[in-house]
Amino acid sequence: MSPTSNRLLRWFKGLGHSGQMIWAITVGAALILAAVFGLVQQIVSQERANTFASIQDINSKIVLSDVVRIRSLLASLDKVLLVVRKDFVEKPGLTQQELLRRLDEMKVDHELSPRVSMVDVSGYIVLSSARNVNDAQPRINVADREFFQAHKTDPNDQLHVGAPIQSRATGKWVLPLTRRITKQDGSFGGVLNMTVDPDLFTDPFAKTSMGPDATRAIMGRNGYTLLRLNGGNLVYGGDTRKSQLFTELKKAAVGCYTAVAASDGIQRSVCYRTIDPYDIIILAGSSVAGMEGEVHAKVRGYIGAAALVGVLIVVLSCLLIFGVLRQRKLLASQRSFNQLIEMVPQSIARIDAQGNIIWTNRRTIEYAGPSAVDQAKGFDWVLAAIHPDDRDRVKELVTHAIFGGQCEDSCEYRKRRSDGAYLWYSSQITRVEDPADGGVYFLQTGTDIHDRKMAEERARVAQKLESIGQLTGGMAHDFNNLLAIICWQPGAFKVGRSQ
Image (tube, rainbow, N blue to C red; front, top):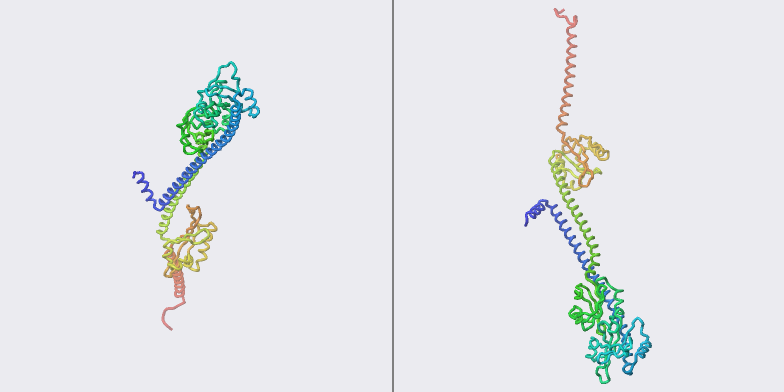
């Protein structure tokens, strides 16, 4: 243990009971502070979890909304492909005008603006709604396109959503939606291709973005990115087979996860959902840093409140400790005062502001000698010890001192000793302000003046005897003088011979 700790421990021990109270206050304050900050930490953790859960729930709902929208959009476009493919199969010599008329009959929305083309087994476009392939322009071959190779090798008849490509006819980026054309013998007969503007899928992404670092994407089950919107930048293509998404897809077709994106290195909370039977995945993600920013705004408020509570607890604890130390000092002062009172050779009683005796020193008790029964009843024995002829004067002194504010007067009275003898006392009352509570009480002191009173009485008697003696002597002197006059008066007495 360090020297400082030893000194602190000795200081606590030296304080005695007050040290225990100070230790209890300190430990209690520390426990309360720990509880407050523990509660704040729990609230912050819960707030963080709630914020993440809320944002994940929003992303999940956004993904679900995108799935419904994109599934409906794909279903509408696929319906067009199926109808056109049926016409092409039933009528191999389908012309551009017939194709355009068929598209008009199906009332395809203008905003979809699909461009439909037929690709033969060699990859050449043989029919297109965008231009007349019989013109003198060079023939366009798309045999190297991913969608052509996919249909050529896969006999399954389902809509294929390909990665966006730059059209060789128009030079614009388009999203290919294709269907396989199968000959009657089951062999590959070409591809029916429809291209649409990628904005058709991505425009709603920007309207429901969850922040500048949010992400929205349409992924293929083959691992390639069809469309991705990262921070307002639209990206086409990219191999994502090693990303966390495809690890999660092995567990469930729908879910959420948190990971660092390989595309831009931003950690995001991502929710995803697959769209069957199109083999595409829709996902929406929010930046973890952005989510933390929302939490931090609330956390600062909680920390500020906790800090304020902590300061109040510390201030209150300091006030309590100060009160304990002050009380200890007052108690020590009171003990010293009581010890001093017990040592003085006087009878002392403490009187409250209502005139009731609430305490007497040991000398008073030993002098009057009340029984245990009398002491248990109260302090009536103090007044009972005063000579009946003097009680009214003592009561008048107390009344004037307490209710009249005259504490400078004193009175002399006789008080019964434990052996029954009455001795003379001189009593005086002093006003005292209590430092503990600011109240007022009074101390009545009684000083033994019996010897003085007896000396005064003896002096008075002696003086009286001396006065009587002086009076008697004077009278005798005067009488002697009178006799002398009578005896020596001429003719009053004759001395001589008798007759």
